[in-house]
Length: 131
Length: 318
Image (cartoon, rainbow over all chains, first blue to last red; front, side, top):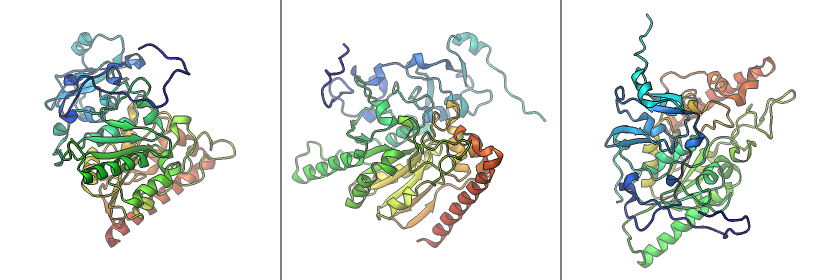
């Protein structure tokens, strides 16, 4: 989209989120929607992030705490299962890791440049409670 | 479309298709979008939304982007509630005249506003909406400060909090006035439903929102929204701070039906001292200096007496 000068904006603006007609938004998952260029779904805030969450599905119990408490709609859950993290919209706040109840946690924060496969291979072991 | 969405557990809730998008410009760890998601996902019906000026509005509607997948309007700082009330009146009128193309869709009217736009600037407008009895829901995202403009105090800022217009220092301990009791004021309008909610108690919140959608008349919801920037804590601790606020009874969860009947909806098993809640936030850091320590005691007494009042009111059913 070409950038407009400060005095070229129209007064009052209407943006359409979708291209064409959509009848049942609440029944259509994100991947099936025809987002227009005006929806922030098509934008990315990935460059805000210094640390990123990595999801290890081996330990996940699908409690969905991370889904409900994610502020950026970045935890993708379909059919009651956690699929992964939307890295275009994740800002790296780390709430998902804090609320994860499993031991060891199935989501952990790593530096942005960390490699997913190596980190999952060297995932921390279960924390034994000290007697 | 208009039957209530059935949400028994979190797994079932997670099948909802979000109508609020990421890549908004809210700070990492902001509780605003958690609250918005929980409200929007509580229903499958069409939504007509507004946002008053505040963090939520400036961050979700940055031209040329919008983060909303529903009809959404922003006009001014004060009139988000009246904008939605106007839409509701028009909807009713068109329905009466039989000019709606799909009259059975039964949309929900929700206005979002921060505490500045509700407690201070939009107060008269909200009061008007509640008095006229529009079928709308007003949700306050209460972060106890004007976070969007740099942390000025609002009438929701609690005693002892350091805000940029009431900074703590050598001569002052920060904000000197206590938080306005907005729920009681709104309930005094005789509205069918007013409630306090917190994003960490999602089930309680969804239940209250669904009840709010099902009643006929104005609904007032006050939601605590910890602000990582102005309350000065780490973004990852948002839910921890919310837990502390509800478990220390600084922010008790209750509902008021028809302006009279008060029900406490969450009783913490282990009530934690207010000191823990204060210690977790940078805005109360100065209270732990020797000269201001008496304020922590006052805080605890205030919270205890408020909790006792709520319990008395619940028992007496008035």
